[in-house]
Image (cartoon, rainbow, N blue to C red):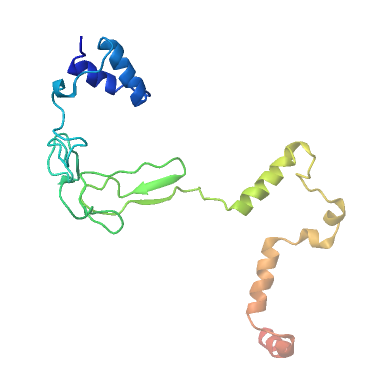
Amino acid sequence: MKPTTSQIRNKSSVAGETLSQALEALKTTGGGSLPDWNSITGKPATFPPSAHAHPEKQDTLVSGTNIKTINGQTVLGSGDLVIAGGSGGSGTVTSVAATVPTGFAVSGSPITTSGTITITYSAGYSLPTTAKQGEWDTAYGWGNHATVGYLTVETDPIFSAHVAYGISSTNISNWNTAYTNNHTHSNKTLLDSFVS
């Protein structure tokens, strides 16, 4: 019994078999002999086959189904696709908003047609430099300063006994006023004459 065309096709597509292995397998399934060449259907008229085309294959893609587009532009045809936008592009938006963490303030948000979103520091906040952050980390590494015993109140018995201890801010203000009134000891006699 000769193998059917389906058996031949199935045997010829077995992965990893050499041609001689496939032919031997066909002999076994075909009752010990290979089929007659003329009884095989669907084969090329000449061997090797002449140049031919496969109608389902497209050398250049001209049609198809489930082909995606880029921004609504088809990928079929020749030439380059031009994709607008990116750096320096323009467009419209429905709404763009910004949120910021604690320490920052945002203004101009949301934008619904055009505008500028501005981000600034909130009152009492700033961004430390890397150098300052390093200094803070160093100081933190020294431990709790409150428990080290630094001087918190100054009481100096020697200074309180000194004459300068009694000079008040009022005294200093009066001296500054007298200095700016522009009288000198050189005109003291003239001034004394006005008094007497």
